[in-house]
Image 1 (cartoon, helix red, strand yellow):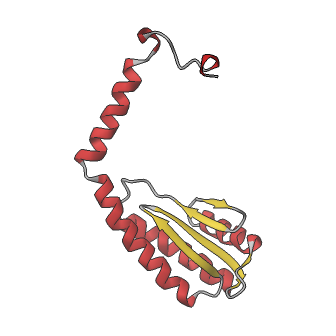
Image 2 (cartoon, helix red, strand yellow):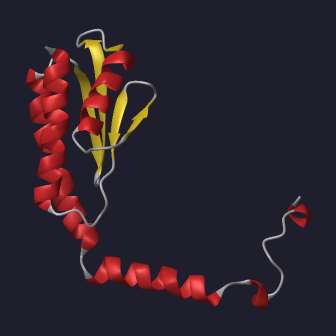
Length: 138
């Protein structure tokens, strides 16, 4: 019941400093057009990765939203057989080249660059991932 859920009863419990910091962060995101920039960069990166996927035998699917991407690593493109060992090999190659990310569901490379990323840095990151996938696929 709602009686068991206490979200705070008094105005003095809330921290005005953290509230101000959050509002300032939102203002910066808006003032610098980071959402629009990330949408443009996200579309570019997604198109580049999807194009790369057509010639890479170990990519089952590429998905993206904004500046977040999932690259599904498979051992068989038609059957979409999950390949967690290949995903891990790609991850460690990328790590050796200064790029870190998460692996979801065992075989999905999950890339989520910051909203503030510059196009040059994004291109460098994509090149590192593409080179690692090419090497592991060979």
